[in-house]
Length: 363
Length: 197
Image 1 (cartoon, rainbow over the protein chains, first blue to last red):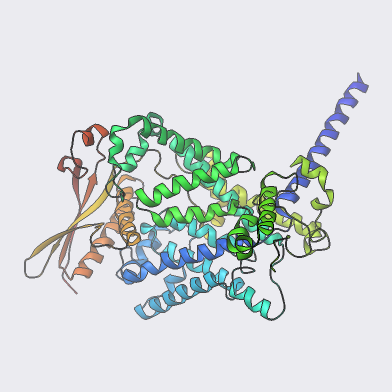
Image 2 (cartoon, rainbow over the protein chains, first blue to last red; image 1 turned 90 degrees about the horizontal axis):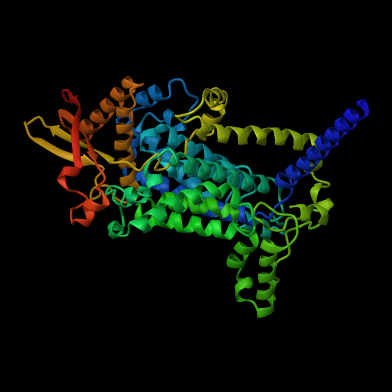
């Protein structure tokens, strides 16, 4: 009896030890392998443009939103967040001159982030500016600000200026290269991916509380809302089954995103769904900035190889052999048997690839 | 992933970098776990929610708020509802009375600026619906009124919350417009009249 119990105990111990060891390996592989920085750098450029644009719009009515006689005065905002932990640099700007100075500084910061000059320091400033604006006028915010917030937060963590940047160009001129696989780039992209999964999961689950998402009429609620509407899709009134399908597909896509996006075979389909849904928001629901910001965040799941194929001219303009080499590299990123990177790309430790992953060589 | 494990064990062990230090990986791992918990707890604690979620959220709240991650992500949920606008009447010193509405597609361009104004009116409605903080609703209404009064150099402002109900598909199929009069309902919010300073 005791021998059997002991055997059982040992089996449990072995199971726990192996499971812990496997989980630890997986965890290390997930977070601590150096990753190609291409994806993070492209996100930096596009998020920089989005941050610049969405904050430049405040210029048209800056004092109405952030001034002393704004829609929500500083006192009201303080009352709203009385027991909170919010903060805003803008609360120090008590005169129009200081407010405008801060605004110019903010736009300059986002411009520098976009072109990638002094990226490390500028990305921290960009985060501080983004949050400062959000917490100063909470009544005028929506999903766009949430996406801007987390993108600027995670961009701070990795070397987002190592490609597509003035920093990279200056380093190249000085005979150095910033472009090497990076663990912090991996962590930054992984965090964006996890954040997206949480967003879509809860966006989907919260819809299950509503009646119209079950009756299949919820999409009609968006289409027929004149305040949102930018494209007249009211002809859908005569296509109830199509409205039902779009409603159910939206919920199914949102809830399944956090699972299917991690599989290399379903990932392209899930991303295709993201493009369809967010372009729908861009064109029909009058939120082009929000739709595009979500698409920028979804880039965190796009392989660096695919991005290089688009942004490195040689991959497109080179000979057919070079193009096919790039294509096979791209395909191996989604079908090969290998270590997955944050975007399904091939990851190499410094031992395997001390610089950056192989690419198509120019003449 | 399993195939990858067997393929290259060396790939699982970062070598010869600062990341090969296990204490560093463990420390960063703790931070990552904390962060991942936090970003899940934030939407989990949006009502309706459990007491456990609420308790956990109160622990993570400082972290979430400082990093601006305290969101529910309930987009168009639980149901896409009617939208809300604010109609305001301005009374001027010479006795003139004018009225306008925000958001206003014709006035607020580009689209993002319109949407900011749209969110202001939706925010006011959310506060009007939330009976737990009447003092905040009152303060925000007062702040909006004061802003409009100052902007238009008026002596008095009256706000009305206008609800624009969604038409049914049958309503639209029968040829009725999205802005049909019967789809609007309005209630006065607050009168704010003070002498111009």
